[in-house]
Length: 250
Image (cartoon, rainbow, N blue to C red; front, side, top):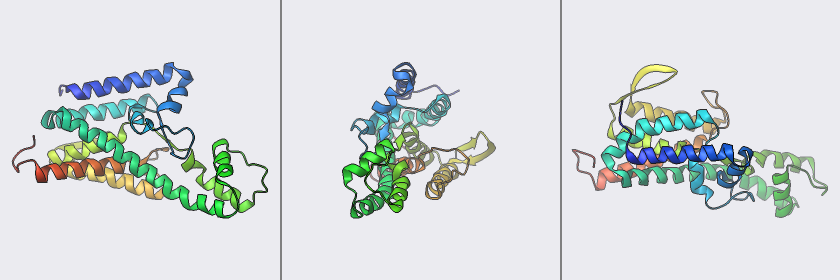
């Protein structure tokens, strides 16, 4: 068994404390309202959520698998890079995850929102109907109602979890240990990291574009995974090119 590294240990502790707080305070709702990442046009959005959502989880299984992955991939990455560079990748990947996922929601939201404004609805009316899920008595047309429904999920989307951060760490691990053999729990076939990690990223990209999760899991921020992985890859690529000699990582 691989001994857990210090920074990874503290990250796991913080995540567990936040999860306990979610269960213990406000009937499981208050912490999500405060700390989950909400769509920026939603009144529930607060700037600190850009970071705090990385320490929130949607259930015991979500927490367990993320923390298991953090231990498995994070410990060897931290042991080689050190705590400062490890944390830089971790949080940068989390920010990259937010940027791509929220950017995708804006891509869904903005054209329809602008169309509704052009059709005669005011921005305040649109946002009020989206936030309350109630149609105001404004003579709304069937087309406008259909358009509102199409952007309801983007407007009310929330994001929790360390998955974006972990995808960045996994990308770093794959670049540092390309021939390490990994296996999925439900697919016990050894696959080299240089194929395994890009394969997971590709699956997330396909799932995000299609709107259908290949493994059947719903409510997954696939573009956040892709954003985190790309951020981790780009950071490691830059460091390798500009700061590391070709024989070792440190």
